[in-house]
Length: 342
Image (cartoon, rainbow, N blue to C red; front, side):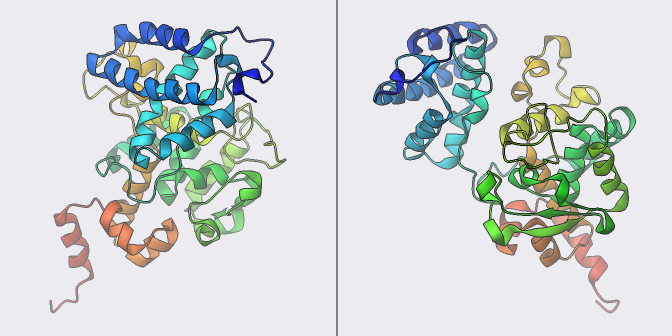
């Protein structure tokens, strides 16, 4: 059966893809550079090609399964890192099409590329430790025990992956040990990158664990369950946040204008990044925290094998992709560990 023959929501207004793309491009063009516009046309062209193959003529019938099929189809054509970048434009278009009542709200968050292998991300994407401290100081003072505060603490102190953060439940807290327990639960749609081999306990210092507990007990935190009846640690009004929502939240919390002046001289009222965090040139995602956290552990003379176990990364990958210390910093660590006669 062609995809377009499936049931449509009574709340949606029919809209063909060609018209939808034209509307989106006209809407976005005034704020885009020519190169950005040209890239968008190319990326949406791939989307159009797949639509024709899938025999979809109306956006109303588009659902998460179709988007998964599109990702699988495109995955056979490009490298994973390229695919992740290319999906940003159709995801942005899907959000715009919600305003035209052409697709269901939340559909954009279902457009996901496969998780990249360790180290496949751009190697220079990291967040400075001084910047993380400013973020934590800001939240300690003004937004204590908020969702962003809890996320920043977990990502910075543990160096865990986004998928690990997504997998956490309230029941995974171990107050007596000030620890978080990571479990691979594919039967209920939460995964660890290395499956059962990624399961572990991760310790937090008492003062940081207290922030997580205070977040759980905060009246501002939605007390909800996911569709499997589990109690997610990080929540939204709709339940467990999608991994892309976690990325979006991380983008928001790392925008410099959230906690200080803009380093590139932009005025928040005139900056597109104020309303769309993806457009902030200084934003950082969860993986930037992971790389920074691993390097910070090493700067403070934590044994590499301990960092390897704590962050669930092989030593080979750790040194090749995650250690962003300068040569001087590496020397300082070695110096502190040398015997007196050296």
